Image (cartoon, rainbow, N blue to C red; front, side, top):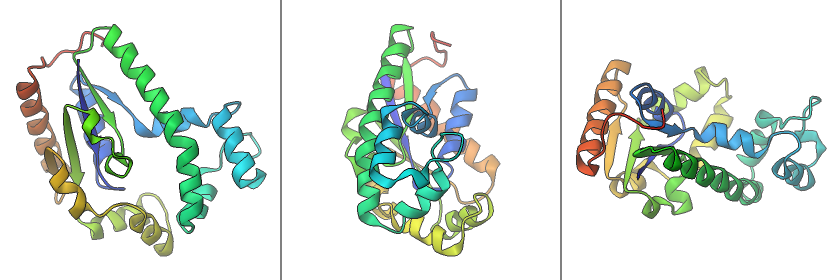
Length: 208
């Protein structure tokens, strides 16, 4: 089985690429879904967050208040480091279990969406790395409009990640997201087809 890492800085369009590839028969492990699983009510991940950051980040229904915690960590580098130390090993375990499950089911290709791939130094674990990139001004606007962040929050989120200029040379493929959604889809499907050819992977998934 072959593995691809799909990455990109916040609001770059990587989730749209992931959705498109999934619609075209690829097994895609959603980063946000794994992150949510790692802190579901009753998990050790959520208990560790409460012990580290306090009860005020747990909502009345017992779930993590992601917006409140996000405001805290993006204004405090040490808090962000502590949260990453809690989440990343648990997310990695969930991802490994999912990969093993799909491999056992006969999947020939699995794509893992990993926003902080390069920050975590995980690129060597994959057969190919695909980086989705968009101009920072476009990404900032998406954070303001689609996610409802304030200007200060958006700037803090953008500043917390490694610059795109450092990531692009380290990827095997870069998918540009600079214009229309249709153009993004066309580029994403072209990269998928090329990766399948290079890795000799069919366009059907036995696990689907």
